[in-house]
Length: 204
Image 1 (cartoon, rainbow, N blue to C red):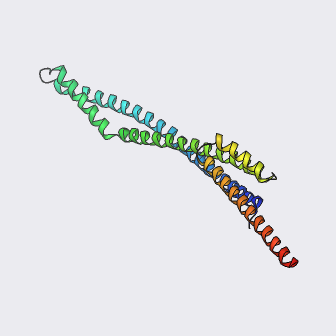
Image 2 (cartoon, helix red, strand yellow):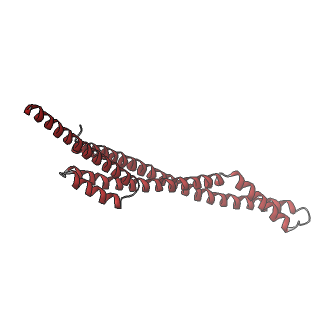
Image 3 (spheres, rainbow, N blue to C red):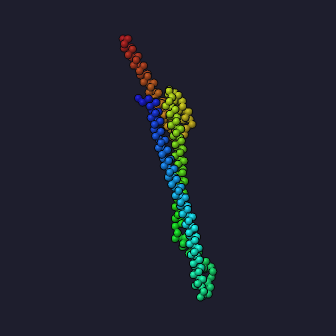
């Protein structure tokens, strides 16, 4: 039968491996987050640059329309100023539709959402890692203790204050110890019974 100490050592090893995996996941996600942040900064710069280019293009195009209109109206009566402004406004709208600014803004919004989501995931992973470390430290202390009663006492105290996965693991530990103690008592009673039977047969 596996002793309590061996069981606890096995759990310590599995918890240490779990912590190592969580640390690796956090490291990978932080690296991805750094890449997303760089892409986000680059995209913001591209959007600003594109908007500035759009303004310059609209200004130049409007200037060309004004010059063309002036040349055309030299040989005919002057036209309404409102219609000229309408032509310029329409040209600006066409230029804006042809540029990828709206697509960049949409992609920027998607990137922001992804950035926030990955940040939240990293925070959750860090919290889980911290919880795993707390439980791993508890198991390590329990593995150094002698006596099931003392181990059970520390487990009960931890269960009262623990939450979520750590509480469930501690409760499972407590059941294992209770089963082990019951098995040990039953085995001891059986040995005593066999010893009495042997003594009785010897006396006969």
